Length: 259
Image (cartoon, rainbow, N blue to C red; front, side):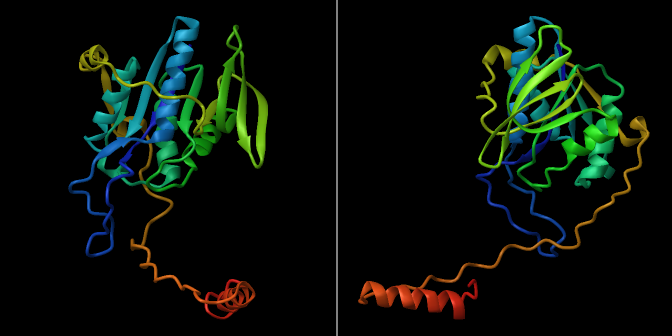
């Protein structure tokens, strides 16, 4: 079973994010970076499929600056076989369409039975690259997947996905693109032997020119800003419950203007 996992390196959720003085981006100094959590579910699921079929490989595909190699090495230490690092300054901080183009071009140069993506990245929160990748490759896709069962003949997958208020079971032919949701699995930790082996596993470097794509973005960020500070809440004390209810309704209508 050959799995291709699209992986992004993102700031740790515990990192304090600050906007730079000119509002063109965030302050990157001192930020700790990790594998996007939803992509980590994808890595784990690909490894489980390899173990189930006792054959195949797991290929990690990532776009980003030099530091993205750390995330690829972490996935290799978990058990993935090799990596592809698309390292091109013109692609850093690109919009989802350009990212999907680069991923699709790299995928077209590999062999795979299934492609895994996280359903969204926790930094920009677009949640679009996986769907665009499937469209560019002309592959069926299933999003928000929480369970994967591959047929013994590797011709189809039965997957379970989150829908509003419940679950949906879908049958999809292979190859396909699946985007991982929380609950799919519990990612393993990299073992010490795995970390040592990861240092010797190959990572192929590619640029936008190697892939034959245009890095011209379709979407540009005009400015970054932090959300406004929250004002102090209002307390209603020393009042009877009916009076409190009336006061709350009046505040919601006249001050908060939400009703």
